[in-house]
Length: 263
View (spheres, rainbow, N blue to C red):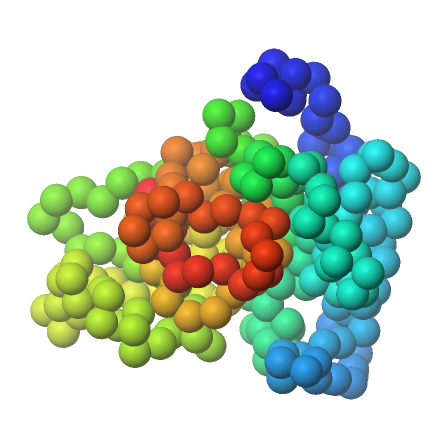
């Protein structure tokens, strides 16, 4: 598909933003009151907010683009099995950062990505507590919506002789990650400034120029990264495996390999 035909196909942000915000409202309705926490087989948490946002997004996307299937983190096994035959589909994490939700620190997001031929072509990330929204795609640009104002964003590569600004997971900063960062400088000498942050917000901070590097040498799934990867690539950044090859989607295993997001 050419870029022109892709753009002719793709729904307007005016159609996708309300879906994300409605899902955010469903999440915030649970966030504002006591809630129960279940645990999946992999011991990751699950709440009524995950389920409610999933229903909102899946149903809305089915109405908006009935010919495009949807894969959500909360989809059933039949959808997971069918996905291998899809060349184009929506990839959704209805509540990315459930641990952040449970800890009530506000660092969780709604992620909606359009995947085509194994690559994220467009993505939207919405942080309901912060009321911040980012969207974009490679070759399309990237934007941030805050306080009703919509502005284009651009990543800012690291400048020599300045500290590397690195975002890392609040819950998954592994020893392997620390070892990897040692190749960029010494934290004790101030050569690396580390900011801990949850969910896909890490990509968005790089996309808007607030950091330059996010190495992830710990487990993630495709729905954790698809939307935010699209935003970062739209802002001029990159997301690659450690060997420099692209981070691809709709693989046999839904788990991602280790990767590096960079301005």
